[in-house]
Image (cartoon, rainbow, N blue to C red):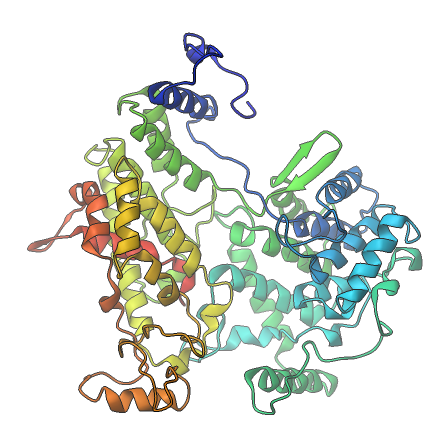
Length: 593
């Protein structure tokens, strides 16, 4: 059923006369019945997870790389691209935003593959916009890899991703487990693509040479160097150049071993998963890797990989759009909480069926997180249907809240899963505390690679603000200086603060102090030492973060007091609500496993 326009038999007795608006009870009944009508036959809920236009563009580019540009779904995806094109031309990262050069280049390229000609007015206008934004050479790294796959630019213009990264141990500052999980699942197959450098040459009329300001064959660095000589950007550009020279000089003796190790790592994560990482970008690169390894379109492994992408498709008329992934766990837990708030009794068959489905989705296998804590018993839930290597803390927390709100916290079926999930959350949070206690310089801020800290904090805000007291909580949050809004920058694993902006340092040194000229001291290479000198009484090494100092305020914790009843006893001490809620702000894949 689409939308709330059609009312089911449950709603037939509701008075919807035009001369009066539905009261609150009627609105609750309509909302409750609308959710129940959307319940799947096995008890769960799942809605569309909308992404931007790069999903359709990358799907078309993938099909072209696989030699399947005659597939009718390409035309449907191209029709959707035309639908979401911005009124002023080009494509953006979000509705109403400015045209983005990378998004627009991929959409333009996809339309050409779908049959649109360069001399069409639409394409001429788009090409003009792209050239005004710096041309195709100004694209980001991911787009450059797609252009290299289809012979539009050289792999030398892409950043080097050597598969030898697989050999780096976890104690080394740079390793695959020192970044977020979905970044990791993209980087590993991308390293195989870099090693193999597969190219499918397209006919010249399907190329995008007209989008480049310079000749596409021109070799240029993957990123524009900064004017300052000593910067991280220039440092990594030099590293990139050095790695490419090693390959040119054939000084990569362990390359084949590294590729085999990366491919084995990928295939290991096929198990109990809806594709590698269960998200669109790694799924696409998995198919590219299989083709680079020689797999044909009818190879069973290729068929499996493509089926995971096809499961994300939503055909509608003459269009086709794709989702970045599926979200059944998250949607089901939110719906259960909403139905409980709307007054649906715990014993309702729909609630019972949904809870049973949720319990069957508990993750009982060890994933990447277990490398940091091998003794921790698995428990919890992921975001998707199956993503056994990557459960996350916010979905697990929401599942526990949903079980509590629906009255199943003490049921014999749910109690063991709840105990495992709570203990798993505590273990993951303890691991996070140890990671954040390390000196900042050792981590090199790798968790900045798609770290979902801000997203997790936003989800936590919604999770704890459920129920009829949500409005009061919003007011308290605005007035409370230690509210959740101040946790967001602490969750982001990035450099602390910006010039001229007063802030509280996440390393526990207190608020920034003005210098003699009245300027705010930001923790850089010099100011950190000045702050340390001014805080000599602190018995803790500079740069270490005191996570325990940034717990949630009691006014917020009181909103989830109902959860404390489901928590098991830990030794002589009952686990407090604070112990449960704190892990909600950390996602498993924000930290090295």
